[in-house]
Amino acid sequence: MNSRILVVEDEPDIRELIRYHLDQAGFVVETVGDGNAALQALRRRRPNLLVLDLMLPDRSGTELCREIRADADLRDLPIIMVTARADELDRLVGFELGADDYLAKPFSPRELTLRVRAVLRRSTSKPEAEAVPEVLEHGELTLDTARHLCQVGSQTVDLTVKEFLLLRMLMSRPGRVMSRERLLDEVWGPDITVTLRTIDTHMKRLREKLGKAGALIHTIRGVGYRFEE
Image (cartoon, rainbow, N blue to C red):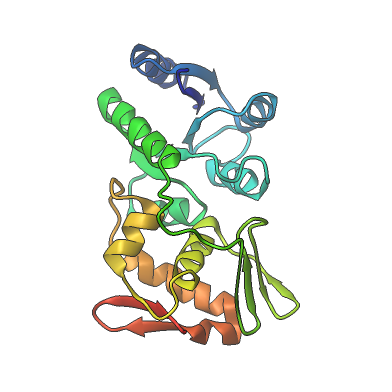
């Protein structure tokens, strides 16, 4: 069965261009022009991937992305953000909110098609070599992967999708040094173009949110990070 793509884009010409080329590539495409229509479409029938413009008439794409990631039925939906702004800060915000890829306008339809295929491929080919327990614990720190819940003692810690995935990766491999390159590849994917500084920025925020438990994450200078055994 062909993958279903929902395209959220307020400019009719661009929306039709994206629809045409994804349709030609063999995808089943639905298009909407604003955030409210997108939420209705998502709840009516979940697609395999969302192409989301950041500049929408009724709400920002980042706000919509945040709502999607907070929804238990949609939080793992692959998202490609599309925007006219291409500076690094926008990319970092997008990835922090849980975007799987980020494409700046103007872009070629072929590039979008390749990105869509790459994100779909990653989302449907998760490795099973290392089984991760549903609940990871170390002292007062608990990470419930099934419920997407992080707690330090009795306090719930609100983590972004990327922060949660980074912590899960480190906690599931205690005592092992994880390089920045590997963290980027496994959490963001090998096809994403972001700098190694992205990891450091996320780790800093993750430690701050964890409070005292943040000391369990050790920086290995020049290499990466290690979670305490």
